[in-house]
Length: 99
Image 1 (cartoon, one colour):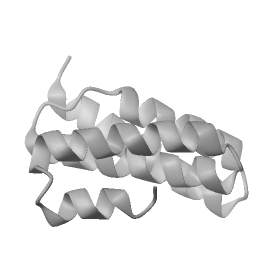
Image 2 (cartoon, rainbow, N blue to C red; image 1 turned 180 degrees about the vertical axis):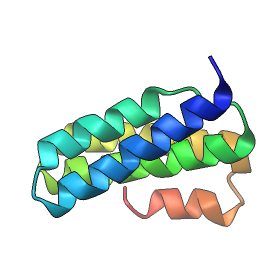
Image 3 (cartoon, rainbow, N blue to C red; image 1 turned 120 degrees about the horizontal axis):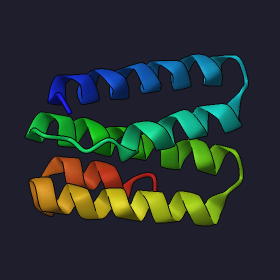
């Protein structure tokens, strides 16, 4: 698969999720974000974007009242932030806030 297609597809899914949230379609938005984060990143920049998308998914799940799933997603994000940036980086601290 062309890595650019994967990044483009993830971007399109996130944009769709944004529209769905704006229209009050939270369940559909969560599914769009889930689909976006299943795409494998090929670069560090794409990996960072995926972590951001996962954070948004966790926050959306929290908003929907699915606290257990939200916590699971946000903890996965935190682990990926630690792996990508290290625990002393501000991006790691940013991942702690939603938890």
